[in-house]
Length: 332
Image (tube, rainbow, N blue to C red; front, top):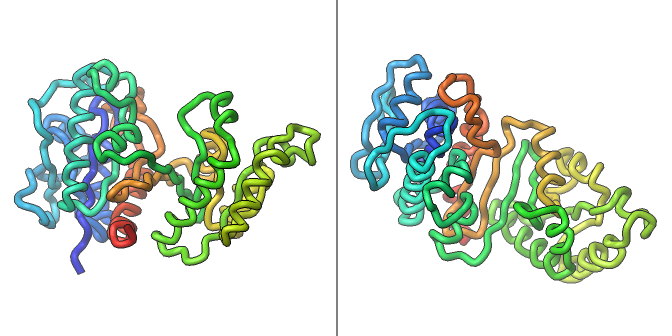
Protein backbone atom coordinates (compact mmCIF):
# COMPACT_ATOMS: atom_id res chain seq x y z
CA UNK A 1 0.00 0.00 0.00
CA UNK A 2 1.41 3.38 -1.02
CA UNK A 3 2.02 5.88 1.73
CA UNK A 4 0.15 9.16 1.42
CA UNK A 5 2.09 12.26 0.41
CA UNK A 6 1.57 15.04 2.96
CA UNK A 7 2.42 18.60 1.96
CA UNK A 8 4.13 20.42 4.83
CA UNK A 9 4.28 24.19 4.54
CA UNK A 10 7.37 25.30 6.45
CA UNK A 11 5.83 28.32 8.15
CA UNK A 12 7.54 31.59 8.98
CA UNK A 13 11.32 31.18 8.53
CA UNK A 14 11.99 33.78 11.24
CA UNK A 15 10.39 31.42 13.74
CA UNK A 16 10.60 27.72 14.53
CA UNK A 17 8.45 26.60 11.58
CA UNK A 18 11.18 25.26 9.27
CA UNK A 19 12.99 23.65 12.19
CA UNK A 20 10.01 21.69 13.53
CA UNK A 21 8.89 20.84 9.99
CA UNK A 22 12.31 19.41 9.09
CA UNK A 23 12.67 17.51 12.36
CA UNK A 24 9.18 16.04 12.05
CA UNK A 25 9.75 15.04 8.41
CA UNK A 26 12.90 13.17 9.47
CA UNK A 27 11.27 11.25 12.32
CA UNK A 28 10.98 7.50 11.87
CA UNK A 29 7.34 7.34 12.94
CA UNK A 30 6.36 9.93 10.31
CA UNK A 31 8.35 8.30 7.51
CA UNK A 32 6.86 4.88 8.28
CA UNK A 33 3.35 6.17 7.62
CA UNK A 34 3.71 9.09 5.20
CA UNK A 35 5.80 10.63 2.48
CA UNK A 36 6.60 14.07 3.93
CA UNK A 37 7.04 16.76 1.29
CA UNK A 38 8.38 20.03 2.64
CA UNK A 39 7.25 23.21 0.91
CA UNK A 40 9.74 26.03 1.44
CA UNK A 41 12.94 27.67 0.29
CA UNK A 42 16.24 25.73 0.42
CA UNK A 43 18.01 28.55 2.25
CA UNK A 44 15.60 28.28 5.18
CA UNK A 45 15.34 24.48 5.13
CA UNK A 46 19.14 24.02 5.00
CA UNK A 47 19.52 26.29 8.00
CA UNK A 48 16.92 24.22 9.86
CA UNK A 49 18.77 21.04 8.89
CA UNK A 50 21.87 22.40 10.55
CA UNK A 51 20.22 21.90 13.93
CA UNK A 52 19.46 18.21 13.39
CA UNK A 53 22.93 16.71 13.78
CA UNK A 54 22.28 14.12 11.07
CA UNK A 55 23.68 13.41 7.62
CA UNK A 56 20.70 14.35 5.48
CA UNK A 57 20.54 15.52 1.89
CA UNK A 58 17.96 18.11 0.91
CA UNK A 59 16.66 17.22 -2.54
CA UNK A 60 14.09 18.88 -4.77
CA UNK A 61 11.31 16.37 -5.40
CA UNK A 62 11.05 15.10 -8.99
CA UNK A 63 7.72 14.34 -10.56
CA UNK A 64 5.30 13.29 -7.88
CA UNK A 65 4.23 10.92 -6.44
CA UNK A 66 7.65 9.99 -5.14
CA UNK A 67 8.90 8.35 -1.96
CA UNK A 68 12.38 9.61 -1.15
CA UNK A 69 15.03 7.15 0.03
CA UNK A 70 16.49 7.11 3.52
CA UNK A 71 18.75 10.06 4.23
CA UNK A 72 17.01 12.29 1.70
CA UNK A 73 14.58 15.03 2.60
CA UNK A 74 12.29 15.95 -0.27
CA UNK A 75 11.06 19.50 -0.81
CA UNK A 76 9.35 21.71 -3.35
CA UNK A 77 10.29 25.37 -3.71
CA UNK A 78 7.42 27.83 -4.05
CA UNK A 79 7.45 30.50 -6.77
CA UNK A 80 9.46 33.66 -6.17
CA UNK A 81 13.04 34.39 -5.28
CA UNK A 82 14.59 33.20 -2.05
CA UNK A 83 14.66 35.92 0.61
CA UNK A 84 17.19 36.23 3.41
CA UNK A 85 15.49 36.17 6.81
CA UNK A 86 16.98 36.82 10.22
CA UNK A 87 15.84 34.27 12.85
CA UNK A 88 13.81 35.80 15.64
CA UNK A 89 12.90 39.03 13.82
CA UNK A 90 9.59 39.47 12.04
CA UNK A 91 9.87 41.13 8.65
CA UNK A 92 8.15 41.56 5.33
CA UNK A 93 10.59 39.01 3.89
CA UNK A 94 9.66 36.34 6.42
CA UNK A 95 5.95 36.99 5.90
CA UNK A 96 6.28 36.78 2.13
CA UNK A 97 8.31 33.56 2.27
CA UNK A 98 5.82 31.93 4.64
CA UNK A 99 2.82 32.96 2.54
CA UNK A 100 4.37 31.69 -0.70
CA UNK A 101 5.15 28.32 0.86
CA UNK A 102 1.64 28.04 2.29
CA UNK A 103 -0.02 28.99 -0.98
CA UNK A 104 2.08 26.53 -2.99
CA UNK A 105 1.29 23.76 -0.50
CA UNK A 106 -2.42 24.52 -0.87
CA UNK A 107 -2.05 24.34 -4.66
CA UNK A 108 -0.31 20.94 -4.56
CA UNK A 109 -2.93 19.55 -2.20
CA UNK A 110 -5.91 20.97 -4.02
CA UNK A 111 -4.66 19.50 -7.28
CA UNK A 112 -4.47 16.07 -5.65
CA UNK A 113 -0.67 15.83 -5.95
CA UNK A 114 -0.56 15.60 -2.17
CA UNK A 115 -3.17 13.80 -0.10
CA UNK A 116 -3.46 16.40 2.65
CA UNK A 117 -1.80 19.46 4.13
CA UNK A 118 -0.01 20.02 7.45
CA UNK A 119 1.05 23.56 8.29
CA UNK A 120 3.80 25.00 10.48
CA UNK A 121 2.99 28.35 12.15
CA UNK A 122 2.67 31.74 10.46
CA UNK A 123 3.17 35.11 12.11
CA UNK A 124 0.29 37.57 11.68
CA UNK A 125 2.56 40.59 12.03
CA UNK A 126 4.93 39.37 9.33
CA UNK A 127 2.04 38.67 6.96
CA UNK A 128 0.80 42.22 7.49
CA UNK A 129 4.25 43.68 6.83
CA UNK A 130 4.42 41.70 3.60
CA UNK A 131 1.04 43.01 2.47
CA UNK A 132 -0.54 39.55 2.38
CA UNK A 133 -4.31 39.72 1.96
CA UNK A 134 -5.17 37.35 4.81
CA UNK A 135 -4.17 37.43 8.48
CA UNK A 136 -3.85 33.72 9.20
CA UNK A 137 -4.10 30.19 7.80
CA UNK A 138 -7.87 29.94 8.20
CA UNK A 139 -8.68 33.08 6.24
CA UNK A 140 -6.03 32.18 3.70
CA UNK A 141 -7.55 28.76 3.16
CA UNK A 142 -10.97 30.32 2.60
CA UNK A 143 -9.58 32.76 0.04
CA UNK A 144 -7.45 30.22 -1.80
CA UNK A 145 -10.17 27.58 -2.06
CA UNK A 146 -13.23 29.81 -2.38
CA UNK A 147 -15.18 28.13 0.42
CA UNK A 148 -17.66 30.20 2.39
CA UNK A 149 -16.87 28.83 5.84
CA UNK A 150 -14.57 26.37 7.56
CA UNK A 151 -14.65 24.66 10.95
CA UNK A 152 -11.82 24.12 13.40
CA UNK A 153 -11.42 20.99 15.48
CA UNK A 154 -8.79 20.42 18.13
CA UNK A 155 -7.74 16.90 19.01
CA UNK A 156 -5.77 15.95 22.09
CA UNK A 157 -5.72 12.20 22.53
CA UNK A 158 -9.36 11.09 22.54
CA UNK A 159 -10.71 14.61 23.17
CA UNK A 160 -12.14 16.42 20.14
CA UNK A 161 -13.23 20.05 20.42
CA UNK A 162 -15.11 22.11 17.84
CA UNK A 163 -15.53 25.87 18.14
CA UNK A 164 -18.56 28.07 17.68
CA UNK A 165 -16.30 31.18 17.69
CA UNK A 166 -12.52 31.65 17.81
CA UNK A 167 -10.60 34.74 16.75
CA UNK A 168 -12.78 37.50 18.12
CA UNK A 169 -13.17 39.29 21.44
CA UNK A 170 -15.06 37.63 24.26
CA UNK A 171 -17.82 40.22 23.94
CA UNK A 172 -18.14 39.50 20.21
CA UNK A 173 -18.14 35.77 20.92
CA UNK A 174 -21.03 36.09 23.37
CA UNK A 175 -22.99 38.12 20.83
CA UNK A 176 -22.52 35.30 18.31
CA UNK A 177 -23.90 32.63 20.63
CA UNK A 178 -27.31 32.25 19.01
CA UNK A 179 -29.67 29.33 18.73
CA UNK A 180 -29.29 29.26 14.97
CA UNK A 181 -25.47 29.29 15.08
CA UNK A 182 -25.37 26.44 17.60
CA UNK A 183 -27.79 24.34 15.58
CA UNK A 184 -25.81 24.91 12.38
CA UNK A 185 -22.54 23.96 14.10
CA UNK A 186 -24.00 20.79 15.60
CA UNK A 187 -25.30 19.67 12.20
CA UNK A 188 -21.92 20.29 10.56
CA UNK A 189 -19.98 18.59 13.36
CA UNK A 190 -22.17 15.51 13.12
CA UNK A 191 -21.37 15.30 9.41
CA UNK A 192 -17.65 15.92 9.98
CA UNK A 193 -17.44 13.12 12.53
CA UNK A 194 -19.26 10.69 10.26
CA UNK A 195 -16.69 11.42 7.53
CA UNK A 196 -14.01 10.47 10.05
CA UNK A 197 -15.71 7.13 10.66
CA UNK A 198 -17.79 7.96 13.75
CA UNK A 199 -21.10 6.40 12.70
CA UNK A 200 -23.33 7.76 15.49
CA UNK A 201 -21.59 10.80 16.96
CA UNK A 202 -22.19 11.64 20.62
CA UNK A 203 -21.75 15.38 21.16
CA UNK A 204 -21.93 17.76 24.10
CA UNK A 205 -22.45 21.51 24.18
CA UNK A 206 -20.33 23.38 26.73
CA UNK A 207 -22.19 25.87 28.90
CA UNK A 208 -21.30 29.56 28.99
CA UNK A 209 -21.89 30.47 32.62
CA UNK A 210 -20.69 28.88 35.89
CA UNK A 211 -22.67 25.74 36.75
CA UNK A 212 -24.46 26.11 33.38
CA UNK A 213 -26.20 29.20 34.80
CA UNK A 214 -27.75 27.21 37.67
CA UNK A 215 -31.27 27.73 36.39
CA UNK A 216 -30.74 31.40 35.62
CA UNK A 217 -28.97 32.43 38.83
CA UNK A 218 -25.65 33.12 37.06
CA UNK A 219 -26.86 34.26 33.66
CA UNK A 220 -29.76 33.17 31.52
CA UNK A 221 -28.04 32.27 28.22
CA UNK A 222 -28.39 28.56 28.98
CA UNK A 223 -32.15 28.90 29.51
CA UNK A 224 -32.81 31.31 26.63
CA UNK A 225 -30.40 30.09 23.97
CA UNK A 226 -28.36 26.96 24.66
CA UNK A 227 -31.03 24.58 25.94
CA UNK A 228 -33.51 25.43 23.12
CA UNK A 229 -30.74 24.87 20.58
CA UNK A 230 -29.97 21.47 22.08
CA UNK A 231 -33.64 20.50 21.93
CA UNK A 232 -33.83 21.51 18.26
CA UNK A 233 -30.79 19.42 17.42
CA UNK A 234 -32.14 16.44 19.34
CA UNK A 235 -35.42 16.81 17.46
CA UNK A 236 -33.46 16.33 14.22
CA UNK A 237 -32.16 12.99 15.48
CA UNK A 238 -28.66 14.09 16.50
CA UNK A 239 -27.15 13.02 19.81
CA UNK A 240 -26.32 16.32 21.51
CA UNK A 241 -26.26 16.70 25.30
CA UNK A 242 -26.15 19.95 27.21
CA UNK A 243 -25.51 22.57 28.07
CA UNK A 244 -22.94 20.78 30.24
CA UNK A 245 -20.92 22.87 32.73
CA UNK A 246 -17.63 23.80 31.09
CA UNK A 247 -15.56 22.76 34.10
CA UNK A 248 -16.67 19.14 33.56
CA UNK A 249 -17.54 18.67 29.90
CA UNK A 250 -13.98 18.53 28.54
CA UNK A 251 -12.95 15.94 31.14
CA UNK A 252 -15.97 13.87 30.14
CA UNK A 253 -14.99 14.18 26.48
CA UNK A 254 -11.43 13.08 27.21
CA UNK A 255 -12.80 10.14 29.20
CA UNK A 256 -14.76 8.88 26.18
CA UNK A 257 -18.30 9.90 27.10
CA UNK A 258 -18.53 12.17 24.05
CA UNK A 259 -17.05 11.96 20.56
CA UNK A 260 -16.82 15.76 20.46
CA UNK A 261 -17.40 18.81 22.62
CA UNK A 262 -18.76 22.02 21.14
CA UNK A 263 -16.87 24.95 22.68
CA UNK A 264 -18.51 28.38 22.62
CA UNK A 265 -15.36 30.50 22.39
CA UNK A 266 -11.61 30.38 21.84
CA UNK A 267 -10.12 30.06 25.31
CA UNK A 268 -12.83 27.76 26.62
CA UNK A 269 -11.63 24.98 24.32
CA UNK A 270 -7.99 25.99 23.93
CA UNK A 271 -7.28 25.93 27.66
CA UNK A 272 -8.85 22.50 28.04
CA UNK A 273 -6.89 20.94 25.16
CA UNK A 274 -3.54 22.51 25.92
CA UNK A 275 -3.71 21.77 29.62
CA UNK A 276 -4.42 18.13 28.85
CA UNK A 277 -1.39 17.83 26.54
CA UNK A 278 0.12 21.00 25.10
CA UNK A 279 2.60 19.37 22.72
CA UNK A 280 0.16 16.83 21.27
CA UNK A 281 -2.72 19.18 20.64
CA UNK A 282 -3.32 19.51 16.92
CA UNK A 283 -5.80 21.46 14.84
CA UNK A 284 -7.96 20.20 11.97
CA UNK A 285 -9.68 22.42 9.41
CA UNK A 286 -12.87 20.99 7.93
CA UNK A 287 -15.03 22.31 5.12
CA UNK A 288 -12.23 22.42 2.53
CA UNK A 289 -11.79 20.25 -0.59
CA UNK A 290 -9.01 18.51 1.36
CA UNK A 291 -7.99 17.94 4.97
CA UNK A 292 -5.67 20.41 6.67
CA UNK A 293 -3.99 19.83 10.01
CA UNK A 294 -1.72 22.13 11.97
CA UNK A 295 0.37 22.53 15.05
CA UNK A 296 -1.39 24.47 17.76
CA UNK A 297 1.45 26.75 18.74
CA UNK A 298 2.96 29.92 17.38
CA UNK A 299 6.22 30.87 15.72
CA UNK A 300 8.12 31.04 19.05
CA UNK A 301 10.55 33.70 17.86
CA UNK A 302 12.52 33.41 21.09
CA UNK A 303 13.42 29.79 20.22
CA UNK A 304 14.23 30.42 16.55
CA UNK A 305 17.72 29.28 15.65
CA UNK A 306 18.38 27.61 19.00
CA UNK A 307 17.60 24.02 17.99
CA UNK A 308 15.48 23.58 21.14
CA UNK A 309 11.97 23.68 19.68
CA UNK A 310 9.87 20.54 20.10
CA UNK A 311 8.59 18.93 16.91
CA UNK A 312 6.03 16.72 18.68
CA UNK A 313 2.98 18.74 17.63
CA UNK A 314 4.23 18.92 14.03
CA UNK A 315 4.73 15.16 13.96
CA UNK A 316 1.23 14.60 15.31
CA UNK A 317 -0.21 16.97 12.69
CA UNK A 318 1.55 15.13 9.84
CA UNK A 319 0.47 11.73 11.13
CA UNK A 320 -3.14 12.89 11.44
CA UNK A 321 -3.03 14.33 7.92
CA UNK A 322 -1.69 11.01 6.62
CA UNK A 323 -4.24 8.94 8.53
CA UNK A 324 -7.36 10.92 7.71
CA UNK A 325 -6.56 12.72 4.45
CA UNK A 326 -7.74 9.98 2.11
CA UNK A 327 -10.74 9.18 4.31
CA UNK A 328 -11.80 12.82 4.24
CA UNK A 329 -11.54 13.08 0.45
CA UNK A 330 -13.49 9.86 0.04
CA UNK A 331 -16.23 11.17 2.31
CA UNK A 332 -16.71 14.44 0.44
